[in-house]
Length: 131
Image: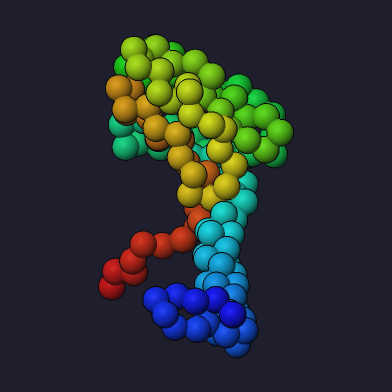
């Protein structure tokens, strides 16, 4: 028995607390893992305009052009997209981890570039139906 504030905590209370903790941990893991679906397409947008959609299963190097010149270089390799070069002063996008899971992003603010992992069926989704 454990004494807490002059009250005895028995074996049944400890088991109950352990079960509640285990259930909460399982619920947390379900929410974290559910949102980490693997995407299969990388969408690159420059200043809000779609620059291109690229297959994550195909290894390639993409030179991103903004303002008539190459500003960033994105490499897709082994199912991950990684920004390897940028002409911006802060280099935050270059130092970000490679992305591969749906809804993960790499953002280069100075060059207004967003790289986002999406699923290929997301391309055909509609935002709204207008009559």
